[in-house]
Image (cartoon, rainbow, N blue to C red):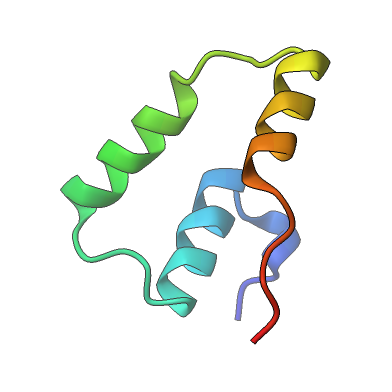
Length: 60
Protein backbone atom coordinates (compact mmCIF):
# COMPACT_ATOMS: atom_id res chain seq x y z
CA UNK A 1 0.00 0.00 0.00
CA UNK A 2 1.30 3.44 -0.92
CA UNK A 3 2.01 5.82 1.97
CA UNK A 4 0.01 9.05 2.12
CA UNK A 5 3.19 11.15 2.18
CA UNK A 6 4.34 9.90 -1.24
CA UNK A 7 1.12 11.06 -2.95
CA UNK A 8 0.78 14.52 -4.52
CA UNK A 9 -1.39 16.96 -2.54
CA UNK A 10 -4.23 16.85 -5.08
CA UNK A 11 -4.45 13.07 -4.77
CA UNK A 12 -4.62 13.36 -0.97
CA UNK A 13 -7.39 15.94 -1.34
CA UNK A 14 -9.37 13.77 -3.75
CA UNK A 15 -8.98 10.73 -1.50
CA UNK A 16 -10.23 12.69 1.52
CA UNK A 17 -13.22 13.94 -0.50
CA UNK A 18 -14.08 10.41 -1.58
CA UNK A 19 -13.83 9.13 2.00
CA UNK A 20 -16.30 11.85 3.02
CA UNK A 21 -18.48 10.93 0.02
CA UNK A 22 -18.44 14.53 -1.19
CA UNK A 23 -17.47 13.89 -4.80
CA UNK A 24 -20.33 12.79 -7.01
CA UNK A 25 -18.45 12.94 -10.29
CA UNK A 26 -15.10 14.06 -11.58
CA UNK A 27 -16.68 16.98 -13.44
CA UNK A 28 -18.57 18.22 -10.36
CA UNK A 29 -15.47 17.82 -8.22
CA UNK A 30 -13.28 19.74 -10.68
CA UNK A 31 -15.89 22.52 -10.92
CA UNK A 32 -15.85 22.98 -7.15
CA UNK A 33 -12.05 22.91 -7.00
CA UNK A 34 -11.85 25.51 -9.79
CA UNK A 35 -14.39 27.72 -8.03
CA UNK A 36 -12.38 27.62 -4.81
CA UNK A 37 -9.08 28.16 -6.63
CA UNK A 38 -10.40 31.26 -8.39
CA UNK A 39 -12.01 32.82 -5.29
CA UNK A 40 -10.57 36.25 -4.44
CA UNK A 41 -8.29 36.45 -1.43
CA UNK A 42 -9.97 38.24 1.47
CA UNK A 43 -8.27 40.79 3.70
CA UNK A 44 -8.24 40.32 7.48
CA UNK A 45 -10.91 43.04 7.76
CA UNK A 46 -13.16 41.28 5.23
CA UNK A 47 -12.78 38.01 7.13
CA UNK A 48 -13.70 39.71 10.41
CA UNK A 49 -16.78 41.24 8.79
CA UNK A 50 -17.92 37.86 7.45
CA UNK A 51 -17.51 36.32 10.89
CA UNK A 52 -19.51 39.16 12.45
CA UNK A 53 -22.32 38.70 9.91
CA UNK A 54 -22.47 34.94 10.37
CA UNK A 55 -22.61 35.12 14.15
CA UNK A 56 -22.07 32.15 16.39
CA UNK A 57 -23.57 28.84 15.26
CA UNK A 58 -26.56 27.58 17.23
CA UNK A 59 -26.06 24.52 19.40
CA UNK A 60 -28.46 21.66 18.82
